[in-house]
Length: 110
Image (cartoon, rainbow, N blue to C red; front, top):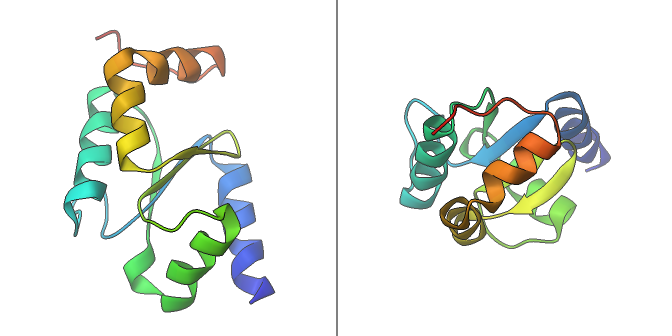
């Protein structure tokens, strides 16, 4: 199990923005993952999407890692930000864009 934890830890710490999701950014396989992808794409973010459906250990491992029961999960600069509802609310309020900019991540002027 520690192998999965190490993998997740490495992905989260070596990529500025990581989305653990069902499917891929090109082909989301659940509506919630798709909504987060739309938001990240709208913001013009360069992010890494990791498909939890490709690996059962990863799908459980990310829930254990974050202590959060659902997928998708968004990480920014190594910090767990939230799932679909939280990301959507942060996006609508402008908080997501502000947080990204404060952390030095380029956001498309929208």
